[in-house]
Structures are given as structure tokens and as C-alpha cells.
Length: 214
Image 1 (cartoon, one colour):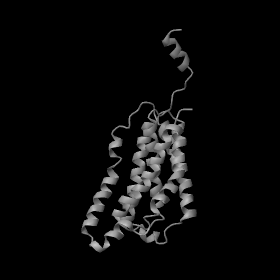
Image 2 (tube, helix red, strand yellow):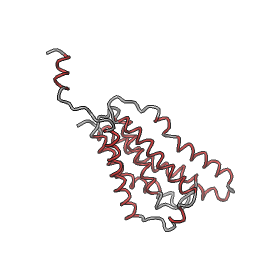
Image 3 (cartoon, rainbow, N blue to C red):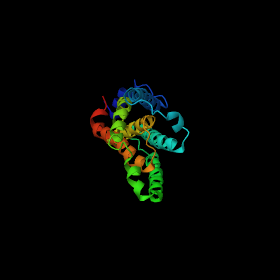
Image 4 (cartoon, rainbow, N blue to C red):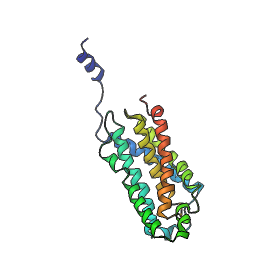
């Protein structure tokens, strides 16, 4: 049998993939994970008591925006990486943009603050808890992302796992923002970023095993 005939026989019964199928599957996985993550946050930590007042402040939305923008950009990167031999593209260059904005805000805030407030700006009152809470809340989202990508055809498993973890970490941090009352830009630049990075690292570590084609 000639090579062309073999390829035709192997592929003849394959149904074409509908446009947007990868995006829908990733959205479903992350959406389901977000529902579980929100339930975990509410049962474990609850909403911050002053949420009604907090949502009227710029800093609350800066915190939420940083996390959700990071998660959504990396989710878009993940959709590309979930397809065989498709590069991350220009989107990957924007993945660090939200962090860059927060770092600039943090540096300006830190430089203009009295020296006696520097430690409080950096450490807040929950620095030892914040990254681990984001990690725990991000886990259901990571499970959803892994489920989604396992049903697709990634070829760059490490990068796909990193993007899955980064998306889960960003969206998990956005959910945690409704329980957290930290609003300092230096705090967010360090501890929120660390929490998101932990979930991203977990995704990268598990990518080569968990995302293999089945």
C-alpha cells in the first residue's frame, strides 16, 4: 500500500473539527472549575465583610482586573497551545502586560509612601496565607483546564501545562479577590503574583504527564 493510500485510509473516517471547538472546550473546563472554585472560596473563607463598600473603590477593581486579565490572556494562549503544532503567537507577549502595569503601580506607590509604611505595603496582614489560598482556590480551575486540554491535541505539553496553570491561577486569584481585603499594589505585585505562579508551576510540572494524548 502506498503512503498516500495509507493516509487516506487512516483519515477517511475522521469527522472535521468544528470551528471554535477548542475554545468552547477550554471555556467549559475553566467555567466548571470556576464554579467549584467559587464554592470552595465561599465555604472556606466567605466574602469579605465590607464587599459592598470595596466594590466602589478603584483598588478593588485593579486587584480583580490584574488577576482576571492574566487568567483570560493565558486562557487564550492555552486555546492555541491545545491544537497540534500551533505556536502561542503574539498573545504570549501580552501575558506579562497585567503584571507590568501592577509593578509600575507598586513602584510608584512604594516610592511615594513614608518609610514607616513600607513593610505594611509589602506584607499586608496576610502575606503568609495569600499565595496558598490562591493555590487552593486555583486547583479546581486547573483540573478543569487539564480536562479540557486532554480532550484536544497539544504537542507542546510543558507550555500547555504552564498556560493551563497560569490561566487557572489568574482566575483563581480573581475569585479570591472577593474574600481578600488587601489592596496595596506592592502586596499584589508580590503575593498575588506568587500565588498565580504556584498554580502555573503545578500545571507545568504536570503537563508532560497529564496532557498526553489518550
